[in-house]
Length: 474
Image (cartoon, rainbow, N blue to C red; front, side, top):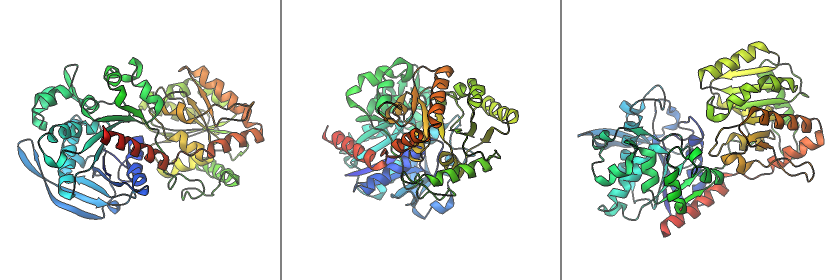
């Protein structure tokens, strides 16, 4: 089986969120279980030169907007699998990866270039694994081209939804300039009077996946379907939820190079040293018996930061430290900074993204707050479980699938979760966790329950292989 994964971002080459983690880890995990897999992703201005090992193709000519444009393809294996990075500076050498009015044009070009690259480097893949709205263009192009091009005839498409809220909308009148002139293409993209790359991918791909079982159900509802729930219900028999995995080569407290001390499920002593280092890093008093509540997230409404904001004074009143790392909405950044100014001996804030510090926060904290409004999968709760940091989550999407509520009677569960999207419900779980924290034996049991869970990419990759096989058989 030959699989080509196409994604707008992928670690270590680029990352803005969970999509980058997944797209970088999946090809590696597939390769490790014997699948012939490769990754295609853009080469951005932010991509570090150390990852661009060699120029694979210097003259990748792309027919585009009535002309012929020369792109390059770099080759790398820095993520553990063969990777080709499409380099076209006019579209990808920008100050940020996303956020431009012509993003739809940038990724339409990338998709077109990815298919051209595949034809240059060898036999057609059995599966084209496309990710989020950025790859909806390739889904339509493949569906069209395999009708008349022998190269693509046997290739099947899997389209993965990482976040239904982002749909890649643009004007229908732009389609011809992007190379989509047929009625089939127009009908595939058309949605409420404009074009949607997400809708196109969902409509024409052979099978659909999303990043947790719960989210596969949620996107079929009006609340979480963002106008496309009707299409999800229509294609329910082609939709499956596969929970993301964690790359334990990167997120492993026994080997993590970003930590001052290592620890394991059998010896948690090093976690205490990580807590000491983290408190010092945030200029907080080194009180190792006081719990640390942590949050590493994009500061957006999706992530439930408004609940943390509403309950901040109660969180501090519960007797712990509060540490946050992230960036996003300006008013939330300003609030966190004001909270730090108000209680500098209790609150530590880092505005921005810092991968090394994120590892230290996961290792050094006691309780991780993730009260998301919606969460397709989530990775930080799985990182937290591995690092013995007990998650408090809202029971949505992948958070509901991966966190089991602590049951003091039978000693099962690895965290705390609540249902209604309300600050008082979050605070109830914070108080429950605070009570459990005071009993060292109970707390160690919750920690070890979480650390024993296998959220490895190997398990997820085998589920994807089953999906690929099913897609090919259909």
